[in-house]
Amino acid sequence: MDIRVAGLRKTFRVPEREAGLRAALRSLAHRSYREVHAVDGVSFDIPTGEVVGFLGPNGAGKTTTLKILSGLLHVSGGEATVLGRIPARRERELLSRITLLMGNRNQLQWDIPALDSYEMNRAIYRLDPATFRSTRDELVELLDIGDLVRKPVRNLSLGERMKAEIVGSLLHRPQVLFLDEPTIGLDVTMQKRLRSFVAEYNRRYGATVLLTSHYMADVIALCRRVIVIHHGQILFDGALSALSDTFAAYKTITVTVADPLARFDVYGEVTAVDGSRVSIRVGKQDVSRVAADVLRDHPVTDLTIEEPPVEDVIDQVFTGPVTA
Image (cartoon, rainbow, N blue to C red; front, side, top):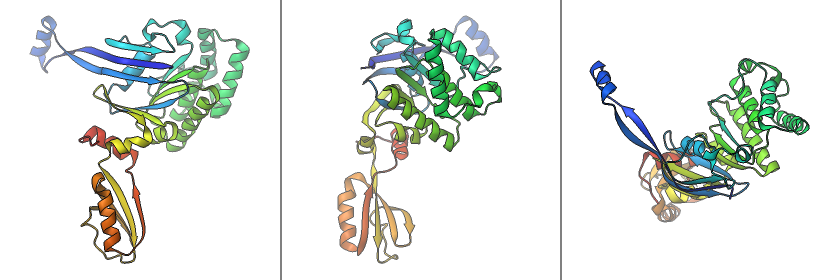
């Protein structure tokens, strides 16, 4: 296993006070704190070469977990190992084989071309010059930024800068990638190109990828397995295809009938009508019965039963009661 996490906990001690001058003065002598359990008993394993989506709302504990796994934070309890080593020790042998890319953070120097920052990374990782140039040129070609890496980073658009950041993060050919919202703020075309790049990197080098994203298109395109975290605890760990089976409270029955005036609201919530084609939202436990009733009551020329979109399932997990 490239990544092992067992009973992981991270608690932050956060100062708090009421608003106002009096409360501010009182806090100078008697400061009060509360404990925030950002990660609370998380356990999972990720084998070599797997791309896993790490999903959850803001504040769920995703970024905290990634920072622990990349060695930026110490644990409050439990265990975490990456490539057989404890990240918090920040051993060179581990740091030279992992990378953490955060979509809202910069690693490239703002006022110089990306090529110069790449040279600095080569020195930091003590890369062989010939190997470094070969890897750099390969990554630059894959992301099609040959002209951009010669411009000062401040002159690049967000999408161009993100592609340059990705190259800088992968120059040492890491075996484990922690990607925290890598496509945040990018347009649809740029998101698609970055997803294709991550998939190609995983294919070429057999890299292990743990990906967080609020864009479900990223997860659907790259991940067969997802881990869903909420309030610091894991709600689901399994195949993306099984997520709907576990949490979805409904399915959609779409029928095409000869009589477009027929009523279908007696079977469930009618969500769409397009001529003789009608979509009905039905509770998961009632799908078989409703489908049989529709077929019995109407001359149906076509009938399909569909799972809800993954985005809707995830939203239901975070905002509504869980139905399993």
